[in-house]
Length: 209
Image 1 (cartoon, rainbow, N blue to C red):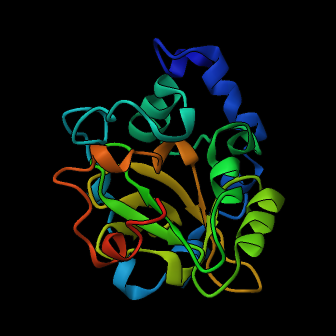
Image 2 (image 1 turned 180 degrees about the vertical axis):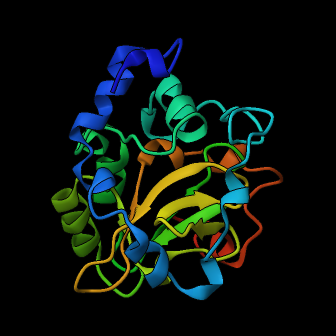
Image 3 (image 1 turned 135 degrees about the vertical axis):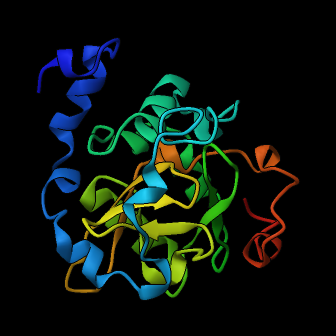
């Protein structure tokens, strides 16, 4: 992949793709075909908008001490590349997970719009969520953890927000659909969400975000 294809992009960002095995393999039509009908979407969602494919630039500050420049590029000016596998483990998310009480959950918000995208864990423990995310290299969500109002999966398996934020890919395994997500795309602060999180999922998780 030549940097000339992406004028102005830092070569370091292009190298993020080298560690993106789960994003670049197995992302064919299977991920799109197997997605629940309620979250299937069309390519038009990712049309060019005010800020790349996004409606605006990501909000600041970001949650878990994430890097803003990476979040901006990978969410709004990218369809295929990923963060380094395991990079989420060097952010503040693992500590947040470790502080959670049994039965609690974290809501993950669109880095651009602040809309809630995922609530995890559901139907499993924090240990299960953490082990699966560590094993695959990126935060991984199951169907019941998806907030279907705001997440879409395109025919090629790309997972996006309804507003055009690139989130990652749906990579089904023997347990079913697995949304392999970019932490930099789902790390908006609750306070950055427009008007706060008024979703039912958000209300249920107010105590542990």
